[in-house]
Image (cartoon, rainbow, N blue to C red; front, top):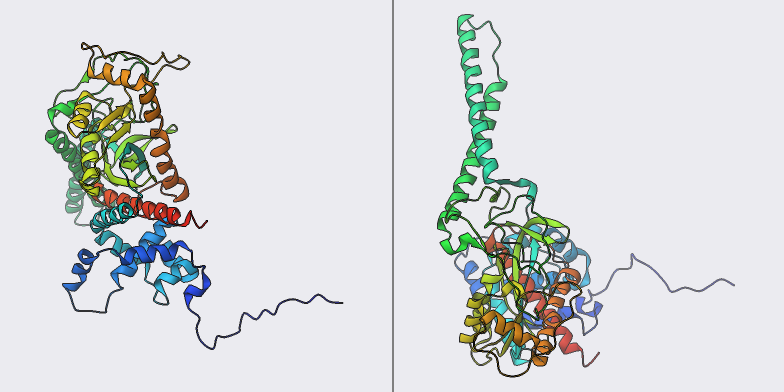
Length: 481
């Protein structure tokens, strides 16, 4: 007796086309994102299209915003891949229907409206606050290095530029002599001698290289000329910090990446710090680099495997549901200058009705000026001052009043040795570090697609906006699940 199977006829046509919504369960994330985007004010995006009433009608901006956010939530960022998913996958098909945008349309929309996503990021935070997902009782600030859309092999150091510039000038002069000699020989022979046609091409190639190097050299000089003199002093690594590998050719202020990437825990005793290395103000260091693919990216220690062209992505995360309340990208490998702007942005994004109470950060953010800044903002600060040497047992928790002669660094180290300080700071790694793991792991965001610091900022805010909607969706579905 033969087995009976269900009937399968892939060529069967539909009398009436079914709704794409019937192919997904009611609780799918695509419906939540569509409902959330319907609540957002996208008038800033619409203004771009309302200025021009000529040509074929564009895709609806709300549909394009939904498409980008859902794609980033699902870990799809390439415009070609997004267009492919719109043709093949039901989640994307629910958004676009039968009118699938071209990959060029998706890419142009994203690049055109990157600045508008900063406003949408704040609007999503307002929705999260209304739903009780943002409390700001305790926030944590941290940064992660995201690879730029540039290769470090396309970078050149300042001393190499000077050397290569002189070499190209000698080669150009030599080629000019050969061209003049060839022309003189041709005139003397009445045109019988063969022309050296390859020389003008070699001359044009070297002149083009020389122009690019001179342009890059001038850009580096302008960068350091505009740099404040205070940036000429690089913070040195504490004695207890692990020794960093030497970069291939380190960019920026000498030694500014020595402590930027260490995952630090609170030091139980104040560590002595050696004197910083001082560079001449506004003088370009020999190893300062310029990347010809993306000049606004910087060489940073991306991970334990080495150095790469990166942007330093910053995030302030709320402890309640790990919602990102502030996001930015900087070209500075060191995090110490990011405390004031990031905390100010976080407070401005959520409004004065939700004041920040406590903030925890690792030792990459510690400075006496930052501690004073947090005190002026009425924020209870818990900032590590270094890390214990490997194998050293932490001293017991202190008791009694704080000695008046202690420095701000010693007072902070003592604060973190208390039972309360240890408990609050221990929450830091459970608040902010999982966020970067989810962004890089679950959402697959490990490299910027767009070039330039401004576009990297816009893309990072789009990533954080999508991450927040994922968190909000899971918080909503958790009780039912």
